[in-house]
Length: 372
Image (cartoon, rainbow, N blue to C red; front, side):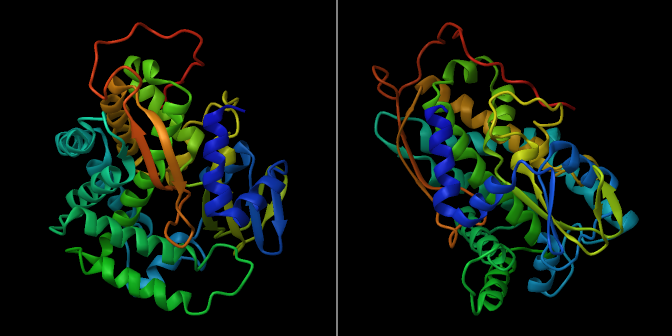
């Protein structure tokens, strides 16, 4: 196990220990039923559930259902049928390649301001938080300060996650705290329905980008980043799997890899294992896309996330930074496994300043491009 992989595991072990132990202990079972909850680990089972099994997007203990009840109204993607498809098409335009291209100058200004000089240590987390908040503001039309918007989205997500993640002890008042956090976020948005969009944009970015950059630094992949940042970004997003578990619910009876799934079953889709994040070389063709779902239930923001990370890697690569210190965010502060701090500094002999391109590095494992 490489240093980068060992370090990234601590994000789970320290911020979400119970969840990580549960997933690790059961990962060799393609599907495992625990009462009315079904853990889905195997990549083929994961794909079957997302492409063949009807899912209830507003059921109890699912992400969409919990968010809808906390906010007391409809949210983006809560619609059914044609309304749902129309909402996805509208957001896909904002989050697709054209949307990423329009946001790129904004992202670059933020990254240049924070990371233009790495001669002294710099914490990546505040830079990524502003990047995420600015993205959420642009997507929702909010005029709120980007950092304030990002913090509100982080707190709303963390409070909401605690209402449906497993816990050893009861958490009295958690629903009330989650509702208040959601209300504070909605107050910053022109349309309260966009709360889900803001939460997804902010929290996925904060969970993925610092961890991926730290992995790149610890495994010394900066030459690869300079050669093909988009391919490396896709591979690092597979390895880190920012959203390790997708809580869903079955809307009809079905059979998945010979296992019966009943209507109303709670499905915990382990995206981390479907993406084969525990392996350096995946064996399933859809592993790179798995962290963002598959088929009709794929995340419309996948292209945006890859573009953000590719730009971050491109910005950092000339400095060849090394990681000085990382600290996982506690579960109380983050819905997803993430860093609270990720301090980097320019590589030895570079003074943190960009340099001429280095020759291609040999011996690096291939980083497959994402499948269309």
